[in-house]
Image (cartoon, rainbow, N blue to C red; front, side, top):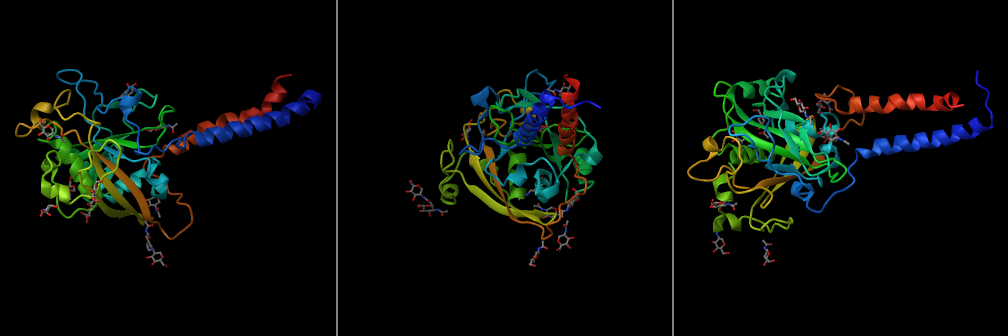
Length: 329
Ligand SMILES: *[C@@H]1O[C@H](CO)[C@@H](O)[C@H](O)[C@H]1NC(C)=O
Ligand SMILES: *[C@@H]1O[C@H](CO)[C@@H](O)[C@H](O)[C@H]1NC(C)=O
Ligand SMILES: *[C@@H]1O[C@H](CO)[C@@H](O)[C@H](O)[C@H]1NC(C)=O
Ligand SMILES: *[C@@H]1O[C@H](CO)[C@@H](O)[C@H](O)[C@H]1NC(C)=O
Ligand SMILES: *[C@@H]1O[C@H](CO)[C@@H](O)[C@H](O)[C@H]1NC(C)=O
Ligand SMILES: *[C@@H]1O[C@H](CO)[C@@H](O)[C@H](O)[C@H]1NC(C)=O
Ligand SMILES: *[C@@H]1O[C@H](CO)[C@@H](O)[C@H](O)[C@H]1NC(C)=O
Ligand SMILES: *[C@@H]1O[C@H](CO)[C@@H](O)[C@H](O)[C@H]1NC(C)=O
Ligand SMILES: *[C@@H]1O[C@H](CO)[C@@H](O)[C@H](O)[C@H]1NC(C)=O
Ligand SMILES: *[C@@H]1O[C@H](CO)[C@@H](O)[C@H](O)[C@H]1NC(C)=O
């Protein structure tokens, strides 16, 4: 038994305060520090880029376009990388996209530098169109091909917006080597937007890059910084697990190049003499308009728990801290 001398009487409350502050800071460090007016920070502003990096390409050094962003102005619940509580993975399920087939991860990781101080980070996960079957449908996509995306979270301390950056593309079947279909970056982006906003007809991808007067008429004025003001918005709702999400999509220019330079698979993706990508990025603002009636927390294991592991890391040193005064005599 250690006797409590004067130093220990002082040390204990001091350590408890330090301990509480540290724990508070840790718990809140994952919260977004910043919600910029645009809903994201351009990665280029922090030395990042809107093309991914791929370990091996022919020729070397090609990347895929990050062509959609879920805005930091979305409901905070949507920006949490979990399925429970209406989180990001539940939102993806609401428009028929699931985590990879039976938890398998095929293919090499791509990395992205979102200019948030974290440098190049591997993709958080690959999410595939599930053909209406949330449990095994992404296996169908892996085999037959279809729409899919990789995503990254802009959460480094230099630009901690919480915005989610997606590299969307429509790929061919496994036997065809998962190449990208002609115009598959732009089509993949727009079919995803068509699904996420419950459109009844296809978004006119080829018109977006050369707007016609008819198309300009259908728009409301776009006030998003950096946008030219004439591209259309698409709004619609989707639901899963009794959460309903309303998604409003705005197309923005000048984040991505309007050319084939440096684009992976550019030879097969270029269609009718157009560049491999049109340079447009779809910005999605997602609001939750309806939640399950039950107020009891959902304790079912999520598809992919990113938080559980962090909590254990957090708790472990906290157990040891109160013992410190007994050790430093
Ligand atoms: C940032 O997001 C990644 C997922 O892409 C996650 O692994 C990481 O823990 C997050 N960092 C913070 C500080 O929340
Ligand atoms: C990314 O994943 C690869 C394995 O696919 C690994 O070798 C590499 O270290 C990872 N990079 C980072 C920055 O985590
Ligand atoms: C998801 O798939 C189901 C079943 O095929 C379909 O009824 C529903 O319309 C799809 N939802 C979206 C948003 O595409
Ligand atoms: C929804 O996604 C599917 C699969 O990618 C696609 O075939 C369909 O055209 C999309 N719907 C809309 C309205 O874009
Ligand atoms: C992209 O460039 C092509 C010409 O290469 C042009 O026709 C098209 O309008 C441009 N699109 C955008 C969105 O600037
Ligand atoms: C677009 O607007 C112009 C002038 O405002 C009008 O003359 C034209 O009929 C409109 N077109 C459509 C398809 O609404
Ligand atoms: C768009 O903005 C212009 C100029 O600010 C204005 O004249 C026009 O009425 C606006 N159109 C709509 C549909 O709000
Ligand atoms: C959704 O709500 C209905 C009606 O309240 C309920 O029967 C069902 O179990 C709920 N589903 C989920 C996944 O919470
Ligand atoms: C929640 O309760 C309200 C009123 O009791 C009902 O109208 C609504 O359908 C319920 N929603 C779900 C998802 O069960
Ligand atoms: C609870 O979580 C499980 C697994 O993540 C999910 O399948 C279910 O839909 C969730 N229920 C509600 C009411 O959110």
